[in-house]
Image (tube, rainbow, N blue to C red; front, side, top):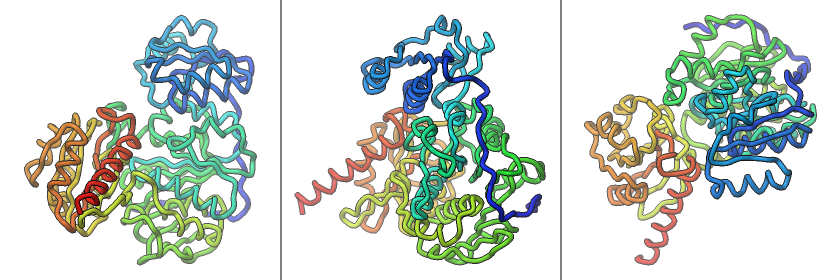
Length: 481
């Protein structure tokens, strides 16, 4: 499908978008739902700006001791273990953490009473003077966002990285000036309840099935991803993957409006864009064309990471960074924890932590990044995706599969006919099975393809446990050698 270019790249300085709050903050009565990272950050930010805040979380108070301590220090009232709908009397609006679903009693009651409900990134945007560089996609968004942060740091620019990773946007939004940048990873959950959120540069890396257990259909998941672009104007920029059929189709059906289009690709694309040429990244801004210095020496492995780099470069170029400014941070970025993270080599077997691979498409990218036989640990909490799409690649690259967690039975049915496999429902037992199965020269790859919440707090927790098991294996190996 051809890519239709709609506007030429311009070289003048950007117009800085500014937020105009649709609701007041000072003096407003606000209920924040959820005491996770984003909810706590929103509550503290709103209280600091003069709102009357109440926080509601259905979780156990003992498990929320840290956030509750932060609320108590600011004298913010709260409730735990329940969501009391009577708290909505006189409330101006609600703010939700990304994990809060539409079936929450407070959201149901607020909807019935026509009380607005906003996401944390929406409310944080009201207070931000800094332009936003936002990255979303089914896969690669954490690496691309972190890579962007490294590029801006290497160029000496003031920028804060957060959103769906690291710090919540509300933690720093109000503290950035107009010359800084907010570099945000944005999830589909965070886009459910935005109204004015407007990235100056918005990148959509890819769209493949994910989170269908929450969104219900691929069409709804796709619709939410494109909400990232809905408030952009001709002064903004949209970076898209020219190799993704969903994005190319959207561009064809929407040839005008919203941000100026930039492209990235594994092959040549029309200007403005960034693409791979051999081992290097080539760019064409429509005004200047060349190679990004040092791009042939990127550290993170795999073709998918070269595309992540191309996306990061396209965002930075659209934001008027020069290739010379981009080069230092691009080349020095080491990769992200829990994403194809080489942990150790023990007795000739390499152990790689790819705990962030929570859907089949990310697993597919991981398994083709190695030229050695794989023992792949998969499983966790199923998100309603089709694992069968991995069968051919696994048959070509893997020696054996280890299934674990609640999705183990589904994995056995969809992948167990092509390769030897073992099932161990406890994660530690799955690791032990992988160690027993692997041979010198193999790679033991944790690439679950599933969410982590059946046995862990999040994918980071799962990755840390995996690395601890590797450390214990290494210590045992040294004692017996």
